[in-house]
Image (cartoon, rainbow, N blue to C red; front, top):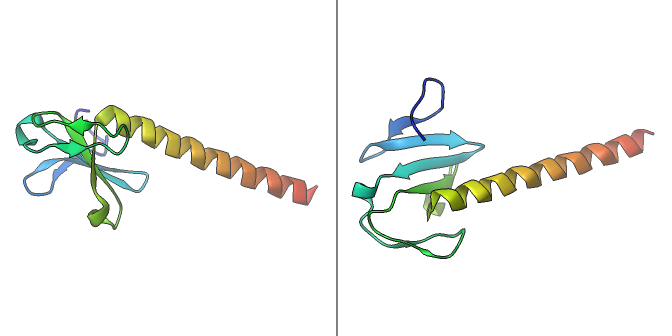
Length: 101
């Protein structure tokens, strides 16, 4: 998760942290030295312990909905969101094709 030219990752927030916006979701990397509390990951429902690298994620425009995720749990969840969106788009495209024919 390094910061590359054109990767979309930048430093932001206070204290400054690596952030990105992906598909309408804000992602902020919480470095182990900044992780001082225990959180519950909404992906696996397990605890995220202090000094554990993890992500804070929230939908664009709704920072009050931010949640702390294990990185792997967020990656799985985001992949499922993308697959779901693709299935809906294919179904919508397929029904339009049937209506035209």
